[in-house]
Image (cartoon, rainbow, N blue to C red; front, side, top):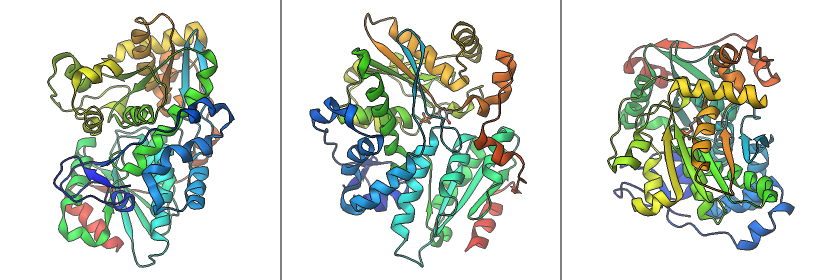
Length: 432
Ligand SMILES: *Cc1c(COP(=O)(O)O)cnc(C)c1O
């Protein structure tokens, strides 16, 4: 499969090159040249297929022959080492729980898949080193640290804003050691992001083969298609059309869902539910795309003012807004509405949703008002324990600490404080 840059000013590349580069030299996001639907029989017979088979069939055209079948199947098996249950919350409303992986957020899927692809591409190049450089507002850091831990030939450097991530999130990215290093930046998330962007453009760092591990990287984005298909497999028995609501920040998850629909997955409608960072809902209302600086909310993994994957969604619809609106709605919610939804769901059903899932739930409820006979699923993108303070305070409960989290609780946090880009550069140069 060939990939082209959505900025149209860079050469086409292979899957391998797109994964290793992350972003195209013209700063565009890579996008597959072609998307071939799967045969209808695949979806009709899905009850008989394992998650691993489903994932292999979904991704194989995007990898082509660059990873042999046996290797790709192994990568998929290691990626999908946990469950993706759809849990009934109320009549016709299900939660797709994406948080049963090692760091308890959906980003485990993309991080595990991408790290294993990089490891495969590096295995015959003993002198090649790649450095994964990533800025995190919370969940990406932990998933990338865990996914890339011990991968040969890959150094991982994670930048996070001092005091802006939760204690558990900080432990997940500072306690692993080995090839994973954490830099605690005296600043906010945008400062971390700016330093990372500057490093990618810095020719004096070219020898480090820097790549990104957020959803702009196709190997982190594309495997997110898998669990939309798993949800369909589980909810097919309802024999009702499916509406899917994604709590959205950078819009990578929902864009992967739309890709799955392009493969033929019968999803009737998508909802992108956001917090008050409402660039996309506003765009759908006014037709004007106006990125804004991000505002802090309780659903902090969605505090994004300029969602990087939205350009891919536009490409999927050839910028035809009317066509796009047939498949897609977007709503935004305040923190007060989010907390009300958490409380209401808990009081009425006993289900514990954390703030991101609650935003997804709200969007789903709103959209479902327009349908007589649909079933809805919202993505529960993180385990409530990751947003412990909000969940315990608002629901007045105590959460037991899951095993995955207990393992990082007792370990020492190892991190280097930095303030300036030059300090980042010195740190990176000292790695090589
Ligand atoms: C990253 C994240 C999101 C947002 O996903 P996007 O693909 O960026 O839209 C939502 N919820 C949680 C818990 C996350 O970590």
